[in-house]
Image 1 (cartoon, rainbow, N blue to C red):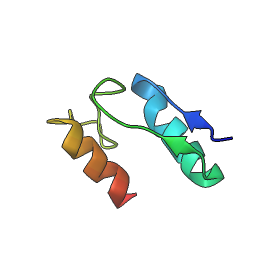
Image 2: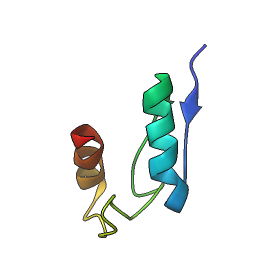
Image 3: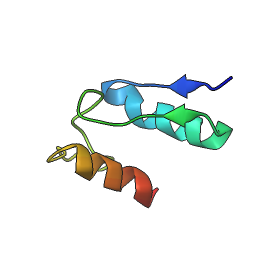
Length: 55
């Protein structure tokens, strides 16, 4: 069984970190948050994915 953690707005990044630590599945996109880790607004989904890959 797989588990997918999903956060919205402020909970997006903490949920993603928890999913990563527990080896759960996670997702990221503009439907989840517009905000990057540094508080800047993401230009699009690709920028959010790049931010995830840099973590």
